[in-house]
Image (tube, rainbow, N blue to C red; front, side):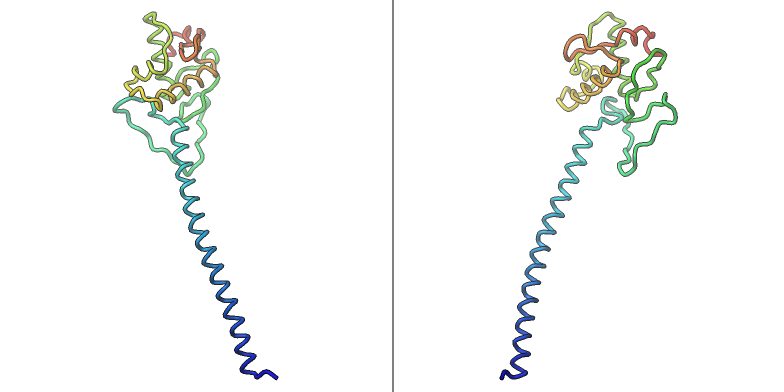
Length: 181
C-alpha cells in the first residue's frame, strides 16, 4: 500500500509537469502574439501609406508655395453644404450646362484653367507631363500619375475630352461656357 506522502509527491509532480507545460504554451502564445502585433502594426502603416498615395489631396498640384490643409484621418469625410460647394477630396460632379467650375476642388479647377488658357491661344491638347510643367511640379511619375488620374476623372465626368490617348483638352460644351467664370 502506497504511503500518503508518496501519493502527495506523485500528485505534486503531476501538477508541476502540468504547470510547466502550460507555462511553455503560454510563452509560445506570447511569442506569437508579439509577432502578430508587429505584423498588424506594419500592415497598418502600409495601408496608411497606400491611402496617402492613392487619395489625391488638395495641394497635390497646387504648385510651389501653396499651403496644404491638414487631413483628418479619424473622421468620415464631411458632406458638402450644397451640391455646388467645392471641398477638398470631393467627388467630381458630372458636367451639365450651367454648372460652374467652382463645383470642383481647386486642383481640378487648375487643370481646367490650364487647358482653357491653352485653347485660347490656339494650342492643342496637353499631356499630363506638360501639365506638371505648367503647375511648376517636378515631372516625376508620382506627380504625373496624380494628374493623369484627375484628368481621366474629369474626362469620365464630361469636363474634358481625350482626343488622343494621354492628351487632354476641354470638352466642347465646357469650352463654350466662356472659360468657366
